[in-house]
Length: 421
Length: 188
Image 1 (cartoon, chains in turn cyan, green):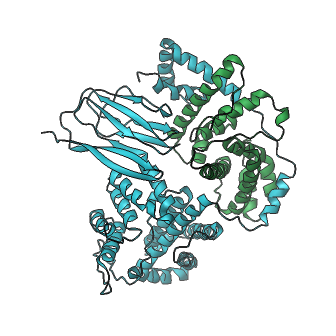
Image 2: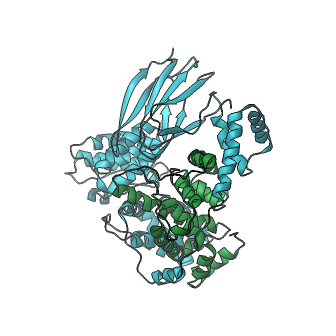
Image 3: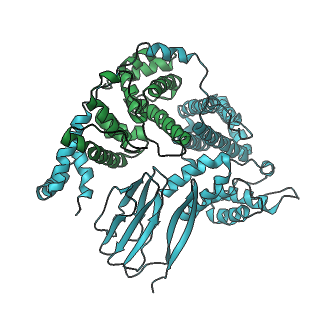
C-alpha cells in the first residue's frame, strides 16, 4: 500500500481496535512518515469523541402503551416501495408453487409416504400450494404474503427437526427444504436477481416432461396452436431451472425478440446470462424488464446489484478511460479482471460528487482488489492508466454503462480489443 | 445495553404469546432504537412512529427470531429497513433526489445546545450506505459483526463503509472543530 487513501480504513479500524499486530506496525510506520495521515488520526479521534457526546433522547411518555395498542390493530398497509417487495415476495412464493407443480408426481408419492411418519410434510406442501395464484396485484397486503412466508418457515423448522435422513425420500424433502429456505432468504434480503420467478402462462400448466433421469430430457407437448415465442419461453425457462444455460439463453433470446414478448422472457434471459457469468448481458436484459411495472423494483434491484460489479478489461493501450454512470446515491464496485503485469493507476476525475473509497497504486495478478465508488449525483468518471500489460490478453471489449434516464441502462461497447497472438 | 441472555429470554416469552414481555424489551432498547431511527431519517416525528412499528414487528415476528445473542443486530435490522424505506419514500416524493435526512429539530430543540444540532447536521451530511455504520458503531456501540448483520453486508464491507463514513463526518465537522462555528443545514 503506497498511498494514504489505502490506509484510511486501517485508521478507522485502529479507533475500534480492529487491527492486528502486523497491520498496526505497518500503519505506525506509515504514520511516522506521513503528516497528513497523522492529522487524519487526530481528527478522526476528535470526531469520534464528538459523536459519542451525542445525548440520546428519552422515549416519550406512553411510548410502550402506544406500541401495545398497535398490536391489536391489523397489520399496516404497504407503502409504494413495499408494494414492489410484495410483488417480489409473491413471485418467489409462486415460484415455489410452480416448482412443486412441475414435480407433482414425485411429490405426491413422497408426501404420501412420509406423511404417515412425520405428519408435518403435508401441511408444508399445503402451505406452498396455497400460495397466491395468479400473481397478486399491487394491492395485496403485505401481511398475507408474510404470513405465508412465516408459515413456510415454521414448516421448514418442523421438517428439519425430523429424522428425515433415515427415509429414502429424506434427501428429496431436504432438497425442497433447502430451496424453500433459499427463497425465504431471498424474500428477506430482497435480492431480486436471484428470483427463480414464476411461470404463469397457461400453456406451462399443460406441460408434460420427465424427471426420472439424473439429466432429464425435456419432453414437451404443447397445444397445437401454441406460438413459437411461447414454446421458446417455456423451453428456455425449463432449461434455466435445470442449469442448461446455453439452451436457456438461446430460447429466451428468441422469446424476448418476439413481437409481443412475454413479460418474463427478458427476466429469465437475464438470469441465464447471469448464471453464465455474462454480467454485462445480464444487466442489459434486466434493464429491458423495466417496462413492466410489476418487475420494475425487481429489475432496479438487479441492476443495482449487477451494476455494482463492473467488469473492466485491460486492453493494450497504455492509458484509457472507463466511464461509469451510477444511480444517484448508489455505490459501485469495480473489479479489474485482467490485471497488468506490473502496475496500473486509477485516478478519479470528473464529478466532485463521486468519491473513490480506495485508490490502489499497484495491481498484481494474484489479487482482485476492488474499488468502491459512491456518487450522490449519479455521474463519475474514472481515468484508468495502465503502464505495463500481460503479453497475452484475450479479446475483450470496453463497456460503457450509461444512464439515459432514471432506471434505464444501455450498454455500449466502444472499443474491441484484438486478441493477442 | 449488553445482551446477557435477557433479550433471548424475553423473545422466548414473546414467541409464546406473552405480549407483556414487549414492554420490557421496549424498556431495554426503545430509546436506542428511537434515536437510531431518528439519526438515520433525521425526522423526529417519523422516527417515533417508525420505532413503534419496529416493536410491533418484533412482536409479530418473534417466532422467527433465533436465540443466540444476536437480538440487537436483529432489532437494528428492522429499524434500519424501516428508516431507509421511509427515507426512500420521502426521496421519491421529492422527485428521486438522493435520500438524506432533513433533520427536523427535536421537540425540545430550544434546550439543545448548538453542538448537538451541529453533530446532527454533520451526521445528516454523511450519505448512505455510510451513515448507518457510523451511527450504529460509534453512537450505538454495535460491534462490526452486529452492524454488518444489521446492514446485510460482510464485515469487510462494513469496515470499509464505516471508514468512509468517518472520513465524511470528519470533513464536515472539521470546520466546527477548528473554529467552533455552527454547521449550517445542507443545501438541498
